Length: 499
Image (cartoon, rainbow, N blue to C red):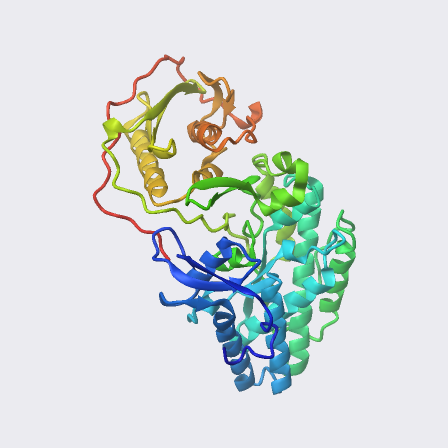
């Protein structure tokens, strides 16, 4: 453990776990802080190269040493003491699960680096947000990215994760104006702190870009104490710089294993995936537990973490976009999927229990078959839309096959529900389902129905009438409807998740 003695790693109690990066990966021995959950262990298994045992302190010290050594070689860190100070700050951010560079840095790959800050980790003991700590962490991220870019990168990728988890802590529904104000202030604080650090680097090494003369106006106030004032102060500090080293600093990026390592449950601006998450119990079976966001939200979790209304994500993006240097990607859930035990060879389809629902969605007849394993868990799905054209049927059959393959390889049903519930399309009134009265599309009805029956999800309300346009060519429903005798055969090739 050379290089660890005498650092913050001293005295950190570790626990060991055998786990793979995903359900198809071979398990490996992982040592991580005792208080961290299994999702972090799976993330470490995915971040570490090779397949042998891995210890978080040793793995982290590898990239920390590469950053400080490169900084000294390039003259961006002017003394050993400055390098040690930066290393100490990086260890502190990681141990507090506040921030870390992306997977490409952990794996020592020659890719454009990113640095992510986990927003809920900056909640303080009094229920507020640690704005000084967040600004300091953003500055550290800029220093690291500047070094990794050889001091010449015009644009950096500093971003944040789990906005939804932060909003839950303040009991703010994702689609509300107060939530948008908080998000805009967070983005403004991130940009101000990042560009202020870029200005400090410019004062030391020379300016390469001018300071912006016209600043977007941050929110005047938010429900988070001190956040609006901190954002204004950070922007003013950046504006007072003699120049900047970077043309842009703030960019939200797709998530990787680092978000799971930090404990973030959603990427960037993404809304929460729901109040429950599937995990493995002691016997290797799936169980549902509250998410961290749900624990912060308390009794209000079911309503706060329900899927937001259509358009809420776009409104959130519009609120933060003035303070970003690049358009954000589509939201992605980042919680690592629970590790599923290896499944035995499937039984013949004829022997597998199945359930079938026959409904009409906006006048369009559809049937959904769900095939279960011997424990009653969902194994496969199949659709039938006899009045649709061949192209539409082929697309829906392909999607059903993809979902079935994912279920067979341990992807939790909750992930598919999060992806396809409230999908846009030709929707309207649902006939034949007593629990779901309206849907935005066939996929919306199908995956909310599966969530009800297999996840016990009662937190997915019907959309309002304005969100479910009825197709003008809809024919009157003709129930009942029969499915084909057998679902489409499986392909012979075995698919694996990427590590």
